[in-house]
Amino acid sequence: MNSTPSSRPRSIILTGSTSPSFNLAAEEYLFSQREDNFLLLYVNAPCVVIGSNQAALNEVDPDFCAGHSIPILRRLSGGGAVYHDTGNLNYSFIGGKTGDPLGGRFLDPVTEALHALGVPVAAGVRKDLWLEGCKVSGTASHLSRGREMHHGTLLYDVDLRMLSGALNPGRRRDATGRATPSTPSPVRNIRPYLEARGYAPEAGRFFRRLARQLGLPEGVNSAVTFGDEERAGTVALQREKYARRSWNYRM
Image 1 (tube, helix red, strand yellow):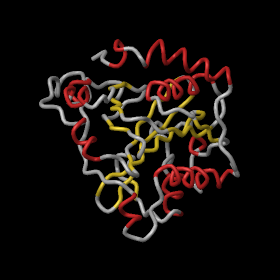
Image 2 (cartoon, rainbow, N blue to C red):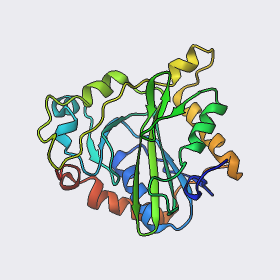
Image 3 (tube, helix red, strand yellow):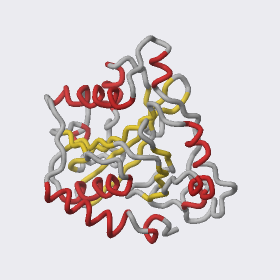
Image 4 (spheres, rainbow, N blue to C red):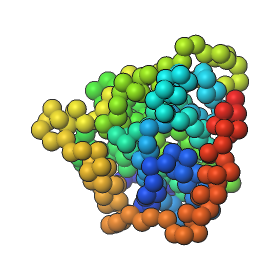
């Protein structure tokens, strides 16, 4: 595999939570506190996650989200708004800075793992993954203090009706101002593609198979969960930042 150091995880970490605010806090806490290269995997309950430089009301339909109990959160990295639910896998490659500001070939492990599972995705020009003309994975990055994070979503069996309703603002209030607008793309799920070929496991099983496949190149045979200190630090950051309206709606 011709991948950069940040794309070669020495370990795989599972958050063990579906709380969006906890999982976003986990990314930042582990990014800032650990020094090794690792892959963080998690699944969120339904939510919308916007980029660090986006205005929430430019990206979502707040009435739809409120009516369906869909929280809106802000992540550490840039990029566009995304909808998460339990049919979506979130992956974060975190490690030492490689010297390539775009993260090199960090998507290679994901692409190769999906190919091994019978999903012929191809990388796009915006460091995303496409399947039969539709996007199945978008990514974003964050670099700071000699560390870098490249993370993305993987649409396996997401409720696309909810995605469309949540990410459908009536109008953009600040489309040419300081807020970064999302770039809309046609999206699809991976599961219907596999169903047409005779085998489409439920989301949790597919994500476990993908995690094992991602660990193969480095001989990572099992995933680990947080230690007590890491979990306590994550909970503190969740409470102080990611669960607060002042962060999530700061623009």
